[in-house]
Length: 78
Image (cartoon, rainbow, N blue to C red; front, side):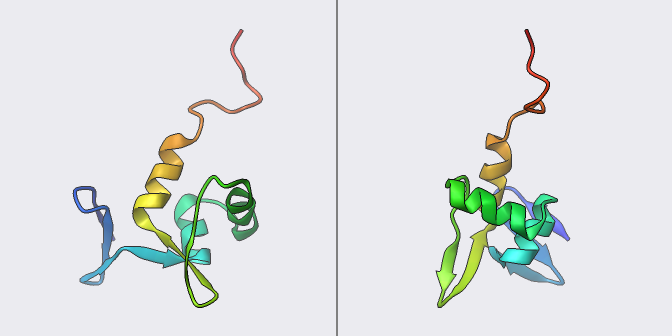
C-alpha cells in the first residue's frame, strides 16, 4: 500500500482508494472502532454516508491525525 500525498489517496492492488469504511479507518489510524466513534461524536472527524454506511475520506483521516496533540495529554509541560 502506498500513499500519494499530492492526491490524498491510497493505492492498494492498483486501485486508488479515496475513502474507507469505519473498521478500515480505525485500523488505519491505529484506533479501535469504538474510539473512532468517540471522535466522531466529539466532532473531531466527520464521516460521509452511503446509505447507512459511514465512509471516511483518506484526506479527512490525515487532517484528523495532523490536528492531534504532539504530546500525550497527561504529560503537560510546566
